[in-house]
Amino acid sequence: MSWASSSPGLAAAVSEAGGLGTVAAGPMRLDDLRAAVREVKARTAKPFALNVPLYRQGSAECLDLAIEEKVPVLIASQGGPKAYIDRFKAAGRICLHVVASVEHAVKAEAAGVHGLIVVGSEAGGHPPASGVTTLVVVRRVVQGSRLPVVAGGGIADGAGIAAMLCLGADGVQLGTRFLMTHEATVHDAYKNAIRLARPEDTTLVGPASAPVRVLRNDFTDAYRAAERSGAGVDDLATRFKAGTLKMAAFDGNIADGKVEAGQSAGLIDDIVPAAALVARLARETEAALDRLRRMTPAPAGVA
Image (cartoon, rainbow, N blue to C red; front, side, top):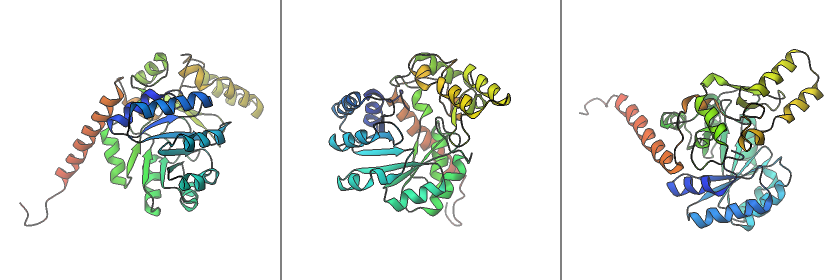
């Protein structure tokens, strides 16, 4: 959710409505990040989270900021928990770690995190290189973990939320669906591209060890053509870096930038206020669970 939630508005609105709003630290300068965190605290007294990709330059300073500003929940991704877990637990903070495989889930649990966010291949941005779907990886992690599990990837409505709860997840993470809110700070052209997308309109680009899920566009077509022509590793790396998320999300260049989005883009056709979306998701989830209850036969002898 870099750029979309790299500001206070979306996180504050989601938390105030009853979800766990998250500020995405990925592309933010430290001073801007501190200001955003303080504004979220000014807008809502409810818990919120800060997501820190551990690979980013300056991640250590972001972690320091999270403790200094008393951020209630840390969501860490793309790195190991040992970089932060002891001091965050000592500070009384909740630590959720994003994983995309059973192996990484086991390691994160052993390191002492409080909960796991488990992401499958349908997710936008950085899904698992293995290609294992949310349906499978979430269920497998749930079977072997004693921690709370949050499921992510391919979820855009209450039916998807109910499905994850049926798998044993304790909550869900929605990214692409919240890109399509008024408060998400991405370019209108980016949102419109997602609105028009079909489920099959995303693709994976980049190195096999760390692919990125994006909407197909001129950038992905050129990258694929270079792969087919036998371009070398260095050439492909240069091409991959030339098309950035910022170009699409901030500048609105949806032809040449990375339009990161999950397969759930094909389930989304409107842009709504974040609070209205949270309320809608709750209603849809209750309706889906009620449908399951009606499908369950009553025990013998019970009217």
